Image (cartoon, rainbow over all chains, first blue to last red; front, side):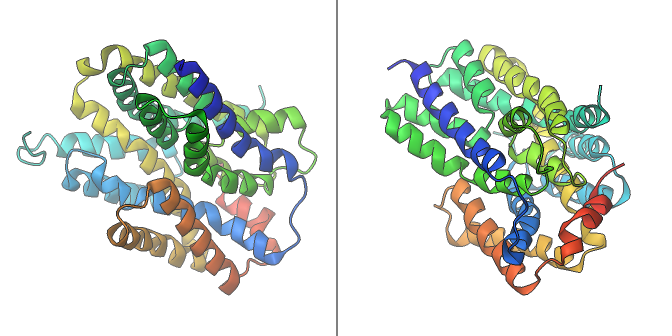
Length: 105
Length: 242
């Protein structure tokens, strides 16, 4: 089967999942539960996507942990997402330069 | 150019970096499973989703049925239904249909993250700005990975990979300073996810995110219902970046 047929199916499903709520829900929910649920949901989602996943995302737990701490400290100190991201990337790169941090394959 | 669009472009830069590095890994794997670079790029352009695309490679590699592909994609990407619902509450009720259809394309974990931190009403042009910046990163990284993945130093792509997480933290943490429920909920979510991962290592990450998001947000909503003004303009203005 052509890979493009697969791609078409998955793209269709993904777009529908994304577009249905945004196009169909056109008013603010009245229910305090629903409102609260949708208010908290982004924070929970982004938190569970970050930890513990980040720990296995780099060459070593050490560089990941240092980057995680850099993110936490900087997030409270600056409003610039770019700065937080750039410093976290730099932290991983620099820590992994230290011999022994990344296990030899 | 509307300000919201420019702001979206700017907030999209870390997403560009993160997408670029993650999609290099995707491109390498897609080429390894026999997809042409063009097919891999088209998949990235039309889907814009990491976990879903990696899973799709497996379905294609073992020549699964289209129904299987549809179900796999649906389950892995079901969290976008939640995210899209949350964003629907932040857009102006009279936001145009074409605007909503364009913004929908950009409901990824990352663009959702920065969009949820915008003051209400969320402009679809902000999401368009983020899309315009981030999508070339996703598609470009796919191309680099598929065509020349082995040429890039691993130390660089690994370092770029944490940009996405840095952005999540940049969005989630600042409001915890002023909101005690969030100050409690954010670390609790992380601990819960860690515990869940250890207890149920076989549950795929897509399900894990949905289960925890529904359970924890639901519990928080029951025990700490948001007051009218909190869920609305005030809190959003406070969370919003200048």
